[in-house]
Length: 245
Image (cartoon, rainbow, N blue to C red; front, side, top):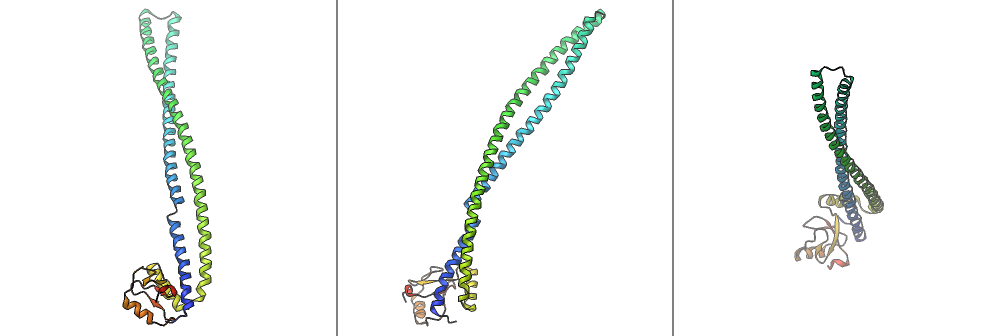
């Protein structure tokens, strides 16, 4: 097909716009700001799990403390009952010995239970400190995540503006090309990523392969308005003064 050389030259402008659109789309997919957001989301999740784990531990310790308190209270009541019976003076000699023995056993039992409760309360105190630390760490992670999300959103907004600008430029260029040429360009761009490129120093600007002398001789003899395509990659090769033909 034949297309006026100035129109062919404008394919380079279209190719530049499309290349920028491709770069914008690629950057959107591998956005460093998005990767940072994902990293911080994982970190926040880890911190949150740690905080929840400590909360569960505190709940378990509270349950253990309540159980021990109930047991201690039960032992104390039995001690008070036995002491009351002893102080009443109405206990037979045989029962008196049994009550004294039981009081000794109850006192030892209460001591063990109180020691166990003290240990659990100390563990709870340490767990509360861990929970406070985990909460502070989680808060920092959430603040960092919010800041990273803001930076990500700003970067995406910048890309959106750049993409819209390129889309507008493309819309302005497309009507200048014959439909057949545009179809060839778009099909080639879909296949290999580059629809048109400059022929420069015997090299196709799309695939960067150097053409042999026979091909260069053939292109040199071709009319300026004839659309020339790379024999290697198929891209439209735009000839200008820089082509060295």
